[in-house]
Length: 222
Image 1 (cartoon, rainbow, N blue to C red):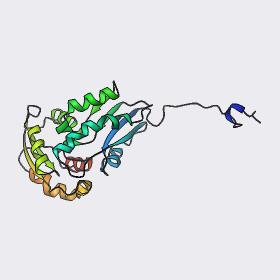
Image 2: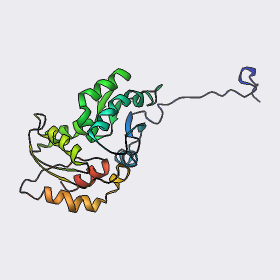
Image 3: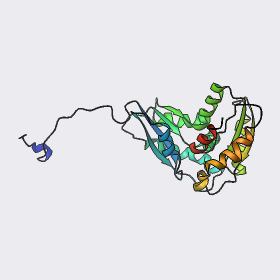
């Protein structure tokens, strides 16, 4: 019988061997909008890899999506990053809001994250989409959103900037309450948007949107 250890309140001390933990290969920090119900389960479906884990932190978001409330998330971002497993390793922080990335700006988002977690890589849906366009040689883009007219105007201005050297068509679903906009059925996204936008002779087009559910369904039609 092992001797009791008074320093441990009479509990028996045991030897242990530590491994790399559940995120031995990669630890991904995900900034999620407070009322987003989609991105976390879908990101995990995309990453069924041993040793790769996603850890999320919520960021406040107004119920009515407007350019002003999207821009205001920049002020909330430092605290959201601070709450991402603060005493553990992070390899990358992903900001999970497409429209917010366009309005705040990818460079500003990266700068905010860098101040809180120096040396950690940063990504966002917009930069990821632009990188994919460049890699795939995309020249014609179908852009489908669930946003309000006000937000769509800001999104369109981003895509006609020098960052995007491609022609594009746009379509939108009338935006319901933010909390339910990601409930749009995949069939509606395919039939109502992607086929119409991508029916031109150009074979390659892309349709970044508000959530991974939208992106996955659109990507399946490329």
